[in-house]
Image 1 (cartoon, rainbow, N blue to C red):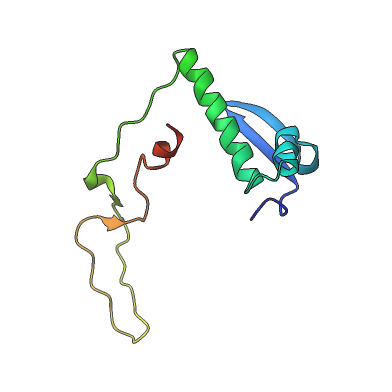
Image 2: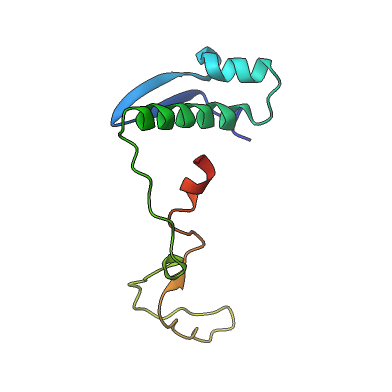
Length: 112
């Protein structure tokens, strides 16, 4: 993972830079590593996000996003050109939305 790759970590929340430190100086990350937590970087950031969400809820500032609708699971494309396939043929043009692989609002569901 990225736990041993990065050199610095930044946390931006509520339009502010809340933290910017070297990996080896970040107390939350170091604590997770020392405790043998799996994916310590992920768990550190997840903890920050959960704490921020709880603070926003307590202050009445939390506005959850609406759940994703089935029809939102694709994106419109403005690409007008032809796509040439490996065999030299032209790919058929898609009709309607082109799936993006991302469902809007899906990320939010992991933090409730």
